[in-house]
Length: 249
Image (cartoon, rainbow, N blue to C red; front, side, top):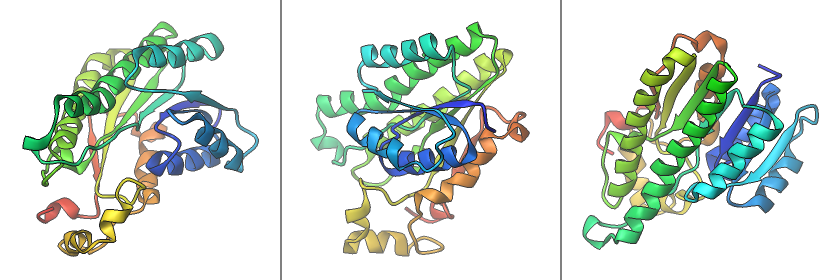
């Protein structure tokens, strides 16, 4: 898989950070993007494989100008990437009646509009260069399940799945594969405190294996979608949740 370049959004923390180290170990050249450039540069320094090219780019996915800057950087310096991993995302925890219009706009701008704009920009580059490519969108099992206080998050992740399928349909003619990974609950900085509480423990105690996943549990699935052996797979949603969605979340 070496000699290929990946753009990874939301790279500086959580799942994105785990992906960054894994992809570097596989030998991919990387463009690591997130809002926190300082953390990205620390991440770059911590990556052990020094035989690959790593670029860091400040990216606010809610800002179309910021997205255009990253897309233009790729166009001017690389022409295009081989893979886009749309990983950036946020959650806003609140009951529906307590949500504000600002909450709605912020989460949809981050979780739907941003990935849509980035994918469009990267796909156009791939098409112009007549280059086969892969786009992997990181969704969630909450795209198809609901829990209290996560209505907007669930809505955005559902939209991301439909976006994945629509892009896969329209871009198949250009040899661009578009798929999604729907993780179950994975320990990240956003939810670690919750799963240490009584309510968090009660929640995962209902699941078949009574545990919360770690980011490294997604790596085999990511590797499969990156591999040429998955060339026949597009428009697919791969659920990786340790059976969590088999029980009431």
